[in-house]
Image (cartoon, rainbow, N blue to C red; front, side, top):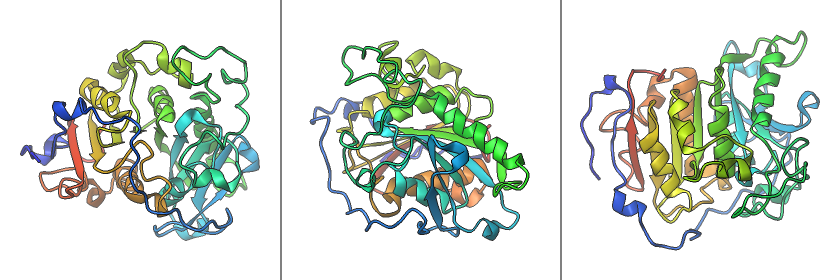
Length: 345
């Protein structure tokens, strides 16, 4: 693996590269790889996650269209505030517990994670495919309006990027709501938007919001055909839209067999702001989200968020320098570009 030596103060460092030949890999696009079995199911109010603040999953009556992941004992935070992570699901499904293990792990490290969609049966949390675990489409979505699906897609989008911003609006309001459990506990200046696959397109769309600090795109990337992202995700996420984004971007995907690999690689090349792209060998489009504590992908998410939203320089070492944490792991291939030090702005 090549490791170009760039100065840490120049920002994120290219500590590995996925060559263009790999992007043309001809293996089957839906190849599946072995995953660790999901953990035994526990009730939503059972604290989970490996962080210092074991987290719960709940449907907050003030945001009935979403599922909220938060530290179980908010008092244990002391003076520490919760940055916000708004998340959109793979398949753009309206299922807020679809990525439970991944989002619970994030929340357990002192974040407020909010997923698009309401609760679905517990099977949605561990099933590899989202096809059999879909709630009714969200009001106002293309599917709810019975819009015709775009050619080449499986159907009109059942959610919208607006739902991610609804989560952000709610969190900001909750921080100032007198007597609420989140009063004064949310860092409203530190906000991330993230999404997987179809949800990654919605994250690209919402990353334009001036309140957003960083965005993450998981097993996803913009399509070369203009308008196709709207057809499947109700999102403005064409290749040309990437040039408008200047906030730090994190792209994570499986190996070249991941159907989204080429799109992610091309997005990274087009982005003009600071960006970090990582792909993992022996990992497909399903990632590691349904492994215990969200698996290896959740570890990367936590470190990125600790750096970008909390200014954690120790977490930054996972991404910065010739000897960065991901650089030293043979199963990971990484590449980056950008300027600045600390949380990239």
